[in-house]
Image (cartoon, rainbow, N blue to C red; front, side, top):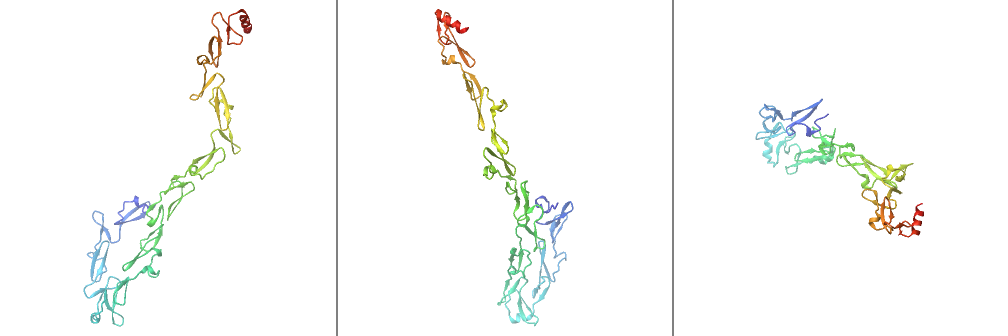
Length: 351
């Protein structure tokens, strides 16, 4: 694992140190121009006092580096380290140079400029725009050349980062992407891969920056099911299942006859099959209770719906009639009478 790629997980102070990957680990080393002090903190090296500079005359220390300077009467050479004595001819000719004057190969005084500048017709130094030509800059990504005063800098397109040489662009490695590879991929299970330019690339059925959000195809309407089927979302896709009251047979959803077995319905008396469902009902003399799905006996005697002329006796699912003492129930089972003929008919009815 290259721990230096996961910059958020390392302990290096990236303002003063660079991360160096090692086998099985990593180390933090001071940037060029810095060294560790007694407290093991990276501290600027003063090249001017430590005699580690290459200046011919004067040295000016800078954070992490240094600049060379020259005594009066001298100008800095193109190597930015040595000093060139200003010829007397320059002062004699009274050249108005914005930077410095020196003699050319013919011992003639001329104005000259430091590296990155060019002398115009008035002796003034004008910045050279190195980004206008591929011959003037070393940026590997040419569209990333940025002109600066006296020089230029390079930048990289998304999906790559600048190498230590400040010129070469390297493609993002490991689980990083974006400009300068500063973004962590951290892709979810729905990612096909991590693209160095755009990050996590999702497979079909997933979305989100990290491809960790399942797309509900049933809600978006992008998954079609047949007649008598319903759409059921699953991770990364969807499936079709038969609606309630149907079962799959030969690839088609068929109606389930819930009334064919008591295991499929909760009716207490009468079950009537419907397409995709069923209804419960009761025998005559009962009323259906929608809360409990049970049949309750109707007390015709209390409701006064019986046809009894005399007494009414409720029975399960029905009722029967009776008569007071001295009266006899007629053959129709509802009327009462007290004469002999009626009694004869009554006993005949009972026999």
